[in-house]
Image (tube, rainbow, N blue to C red):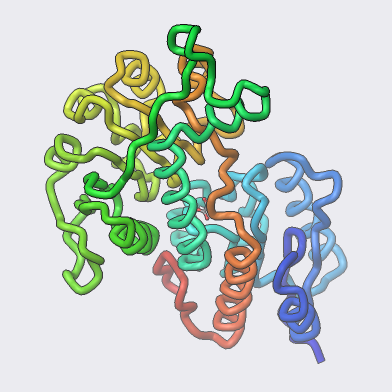
Length: 350
Ligand SMILES: O=CC(=O)O
């Protein structure tokens, strides 16, 4: 017999199929189908309509709202979209993803509602993706692939600048990790196995037992001594444009930069300048500031092979999304049992 307190869901689980089928048995869930929804306004209206339909029929209101991975195009998930839910007693939200810069968590706290992310689901996939981009940036991977498919093999020695440049081995290079959360730590473990020297900067030093061979340094030290810089911190007001003109000027000439966190942590205008001046050798970006729009400077033909761009997919593996859906279900179950969910990122007064 399904629970009386209803839940609203945006779409459905796509990986934890059998586990979610059991959730649908356990609880009374109304699903907003994704078909036909393209943007925030569409979801905002669908949420308002779902709440209004419930209220009009005198049924008990939704206590929870969940959404899954692949719904980033609908963000922000904030007061504008979710107020009809909290006004009617909804006290739990959970969405797929580690980052929640596009979720109105402060507002949720003030409404007495939890927000639960999926904190460790994409750790391995994103750390693997960061290592993949470090390797792709330090070896001329993009150029090699384009040349090979175009029948140019390694290029034409008779044409100045046409030969593919040599790659660089990462063994012995210093990797500076900005942000030593679970992804930063997992990247450190992988990079250590590749023979890199590791330094990191974080809001504060983490316990040595979790540093995975990385040494805590100041941001200035990290900028000045890293051969490769990997951005792994969340986007907050204090990390927006954390790497800008001043920071690029402090870096080693020829540094490689990889960002698998959030685009806005890097000032893209400053990055383009640093690429053009040769300060930055190559960059591997899984994220850009105004996704999915790409800063035209990054697409400048003169930089083409030195800018490796991916469509925010490094975290996106079947294993990661499966784990994430299980984490959403775990949080929902905990909330429905009246517990504080382990993955709550906020501390509302309930
Ligand atoms: O970018 C992906 C995430 O934050 O989960």
